[in-house]
Structures are given as structure tokens and as C-alpha cells.
Length: 373
Image (cartoon, rainbow, N blue to C red; front, side, top):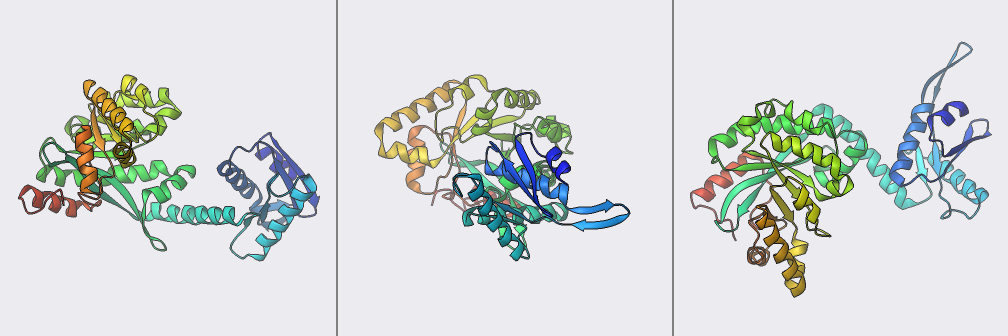
């Protein structure tokens, strides 16, 4: 067991047998809690399951207690005692095989494990839905597009937004399967949008350009294989954080997407620092700024001048600017004064299911509904 653990774990780790059925493992420079969880799962995989020894068969299970230096002790003995105490707590629990000394860590861990287990079932059962939120042209006061979001219909948690589960899905390597479902479902929705909506209407979809195979997955989909037919309708959104993480990899995917005629929108472009390199080097058609920028512009004149200036720079490069999180008429007026081209937010509508969105659009076009409350 010790040999398998030592060979299965990273080099910067120490494995020791301290009792007949107990091992102590020290991780040096493990980086972050998420990486530590990954190591713990490797340990579980090594230990759990059927073992055979001299003709006898054993079914083994693992129980793990976790402590941290220096939070749980200033020397190895104190840390080991804290980890042993956490181990005893794990043994007392019927459901929790892993226990931390910190209750906050335990809460996060058990939530992530619960979400992970449920998501695996949801992917098999396809327990997801798509919703569409309108994008409004601020000059024409017209609905010109929609951003698509995924929702998870959880039996235990109800309807769960992507922000609550996609980080877990990414850590567990589930994104390709979820992405495939999203693309297939959009493929089913597109014909209805084509029938009811004008030629210049577009749908934007969030994808991670950090995944080098994302372009292959997109363009092998049954809709996007005929990309010449759909590249005017579909746009792909990438987060500014992904570009900051690895500009070169994102740029490779972006060039392939652009070569096929699709638009690219950069999300959270103005959330922290202005990403001039993005609009200078990246093949981007539009950028998004959130309502924090807009609110800061209201209360600080210098911020207003800066944001107005960078919007003018974007326009000079023929890049459209989309204001996100527009929730009040006040946000709407400020976004318009700053020179934003499009806007989205709860002032116009919450994200809606396909048929609800189409009905919303129909009523608006007939003058039965107003975009601005």
C-alpha cells in the first residue's frame, strides 16, 4: 500500500506507515486547496476497491483526516495530532470519508463532492436547460441578440445557475460533455430562431478558449459543421481572465473561430484593469463591461472620463461595447451616455426559455411590450 501511494502521488510528498492500517502523508508546496483535493482523490483511487493477497480477496475503503501547517500546529507532532483528530471525526461519520480540521473547509469540500456526484448523474440524464437573455441596441432601442446560459435542474437543489456548478465541472473534467449538450441543444433551437428572427440577430455562447480542442468540438457539431450557414447568427464569448492566463493559446483558437466567420466577444473586459492588449492583438468584435464600471463612472468623474475614452478607442478599432448588468433606468442612461452600443440585464428581462424569449421578442416587435420599464 505504501509503495502504491508513494508512486501514485507527486514527488514533493512523504509517505510513512505509522500503524497497522494507518499512513501519514505530508504534502510540501501543494499549491492550493483544489490541488490538494485532487491528490486526495488519487489516494482514494489507489486504496479503494478489490485487493488480492495470496489467494485472498479484500474490499478496502479509505478514511482521511487533513490538517495544515502552521494553522493546526507549529511542529510535525502537533499537525499529526490534529490530522488524527480529523481522521477520528471522519470515522464517526457514515457519509464523510474525508474530514478537515476547519469547518469552513469541510463545508466547501462536502458541497463540491455533493455537486460533483450529482453532476455526473445530470450529464448522463441530460438534466439541463438553456435560457436566453436579450441584448438591446441602445441607439435603436431594439432587441438585436441574446446570450445563452445553461441551467442545471437538480433534484436536490432545484434550478442551479452556471456560476454555482461550472467551476466544479471544470475541476472534474466535465466541461466537454456539458459543452456538447449545449451545442446539440442550440442546434435544436436555431431553426425556430431562424424562422422568427431577422437575419442580423445573433446568439452568443460562452466557451473556454484555454481548451485547445474546443474549436474541434464546436465545428464537429451538427450545426457548426455547416458554419457558412450559421456563422452570422452565432458568436462566441471568451472571458478576459482566460486571455490574461494564456494569450497565445486563446489566440490560436480565436483565429480558427474567426477564419470560419464567427464573431468573438470578450466578457469582463473592463472588470478590473483595462485590457488594451486584447483589443490591440485579439481578433475581437465586441467587448463587455459590467455595471460596476458604470456605477464607478457615476460616482467618480475621472473614472467616467477614462471609461468614455476607452469606449471611443474600441469604436475607433470598430469594436462594439456591450454594457452588462443593466438593472435600472439609471444604469441604462449612464451606459448610453458613456457610448455603449448594446446592453443586457434584468431591466430588459431575466434569462428566458426559448419559447418565452420568442414570445417576448414577438410582443416587443408588435409594440405590445417595452424594453425600458
